[in-house]
Amino acid sequence: MSVLAELSLFPMDKGESVGRYVAAALEIIRSSGVPYELHPMGTCLEGEWDEVMAVVKACHDRLRQDSDRVYMTVKIDSRAGDSGRLRRKVETVRSYLTG
Image (cartoon, rainbow, N blue to C red; front, side):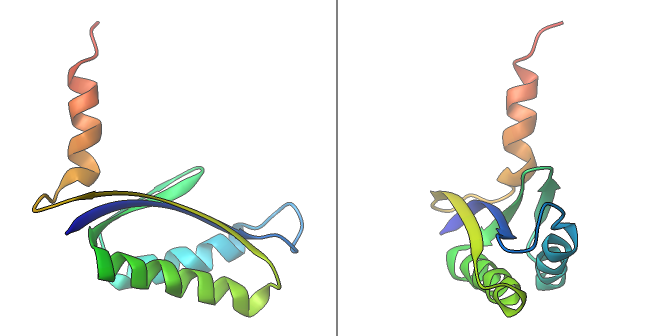
């Protein structure tokens, strides 16, 4: 089963600037080989359920090494037998724009 997952996580006990902690999670995502897109408020990943969930867990575990409290949201869109949606979904919406 192919999934799109939007992941957002950050430590809650490190003050306002948490970019270096987010970067540590992004390095895990990058090295996983799972297709992803970084956005200002989260990162979208695409792959098989177990593969994506393993990356999500690894990101959480990494942030927990430096923090006693981690905030994380995960939104998942699962669809049997479909891949390539990471970019195609955005392209489809843009195709409906006029002007």
